[in-house]
Amino acid sequence: MSGKNEVPVVYFVERGLYKARVNHLMKLAEKSKLVDYRKDFSSDVSHVIAQDLSRQQALEYLRKVKKVKQITDEESLQFVTVDWFVSCMKEKRIVTLTEGHRLKSDSGESCPPTKRLKVKEERTIPMYACQRSTPLKHANKLFTDALEVLEEHAMFRGDASAESRSLAFHRGSATLKCLPARISCEEDLRNLPHIDVGNSSKPGHCKRVILDILSYGQSSEVEEILRSDFYNSMKVFTGIFGVGPQTARKWFHDFKLRTLRDVKNSSSVHLNKDQRFGLEYYDDLNRPLPVGEARNFETLIRQYAEEIQPDIEITLVGGFRRGKPMGHDMDLLITHKEDGKEKILHKLLHKLQDRIIYSDKKAGSVNQPYSARPGSTMDHFEKCYGIFKIDTVKGDGSWTARRVDLIVVPYSQFAFALLGWSGSRHFEREIRRYAKSEKQMVLTSHGLYSSDGTSHPASSEEEIFDLLGLKYQKPCDRNC
Ligand code: 8DG
Ligand code: CA
Ligand code: CA
Image (cartoon, rainbow, N blue to C red):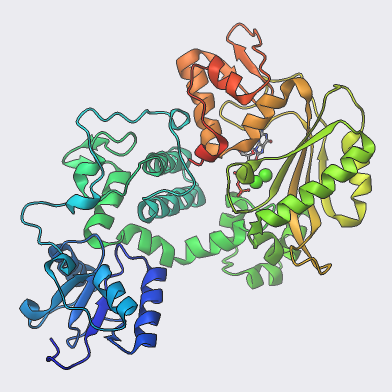
C-alpha cells in the first residue's frame, strides 16, 4: 500500500467490468493524473477496483485467473468498488474511502444482495423461446457471448452430434437473454430451462460454462477455442459468401489453409460463382450494415416498385424489424393486394440493374407449404438472393457491396411471411416446434395447418399468435 501522500496505484478487475470499460477507465486514470494504474497486477498496487464482486471473489480472480502467486500485504490492499474511482474522477480529488466503497466480504452470502436476480421459489420460465419476451439488450452478455462461441464451434466441427450440441448451447443462451437481471451466483440458475439440467454432481455443459465464468471471470474452454487456429480460420472462411462449414473444414484440414490469402493463392481451391463474388467483396460484405443505409435502400426500392405497381407494399424485415441497429444483410418483403401480378421481381431487378453485382433468382411455388424440411426456415416464395451496390449514408455517391434478399409474397400469405422472415432464426425454430408439439399444427412462412391439412388463414401476426394460443411477442421481443 502506498504511503499517505503517495498517488494511489489502481488495478481494475476485468471480470464484471468488461475489457472495453476497463480500457476506458484506464484512459480516465491516465488523463486525471490523480491515480496511477497497472495493466497487470503488481506488488505496488494499492487499490483493486471491481464491480459486483465480493472481496474474496476479487482475490480468487487474481490468484486463479491472473495467476498472481503471492499478494504481499494483502491486509492493507484496498478492495474498492468502481463507484469510488468514478467519484474521484468526477470530483477531481481522491475521495475518502467509506464502508460503502469497499467490496463486501462473502460472510456466507455468495451474491451481492443489491444486484440479486429475484429468484422466486415458484419461478417458472416457459420452455419455448416463443413464449418469452427476449429483448435485444439484456443483462447476461458475458455468459451468452461465451455460449455463442461454443455454439458456433460445434457447427464448425460438424461431427455427428454438431446440430444438437449447437442447439443446446443456443437454447441455454436464449434462456439467459430473457432474464431481467444478471446471473450472479449458482442459485440464480435454479430451474432455468436448458441450463439447470443434469444433476448436482454433473451439471450440463451450459451450466458448467456459466459456473466457470462466475468463479474465474472466464471459461477456459471458450478461451482455448478463441485462441485456436481452427476457430479463427473457420470464422474467416465461413465469412465468405457461399462458403459453409463443410467447405471451410476441407480447406483447413485437407488443404491446410489458414488465411484469406492462403485461399486466394491456393491451387487446390476451386471457387464457384457465389464464392468468387464472396471473396472479391469480402471486406464490404463483412462490414456491419447500419440501419440508416438499409432504410435508404428500402425507400429507393419502394419508389421503383411503386412505379411498376402503385399499391405495392415493401417491408424491411429480418433483424432490422427486431430493432437491431446493424445487420449482415437486408431482407425485404414485396407484396401487392391483387395476387397473381406477374413479373414484379423481374421488372424491379431491371430497374436496379446498374446496382446489381450478383443475383440468384429463385422461382416460386407458393402452393407447396409442406415440402419444406421440418424445422427449416426455407420457403417457396419467388425471391432473389443478391449482392447490390448500396449507397453509404455519407451521401457522397460512395457505395458498399451488400447482401440483399428480395422476397415476393402473395397478399393472403403476408402475415405468415412477415412472421417467418422477422426472425430470429431461433424464434422461428421455436414457434414452429411449439406449434407441432403443443398444438399438432404445422406453421410455415406460407400458412398454419392442422394435421389433416386444414388451413387456418390469418391477416396479422397477432392473429397467428392467437391461433396458436400464444401471448403476442412484438418483433423487438423476439431476439432470442
Ligand atoms: P442479421 O441479418 O441482422 O444478421 O440477422 P437476421 O436478419 O435475423 O438473419 P437473416 O439470416 O437475414 O434471416 C432473417 C430471417 O429470415 C430468419 O428468421 C430466417 C429467415 N429466412 C432465411 N431464409 C429463409 C427462407 O428461405 N425462407 C424463410 N421463410 N425464411 C428465411 O434466412
Ligand atoms: Ca437479415
Ligand atoms: Ca437474409
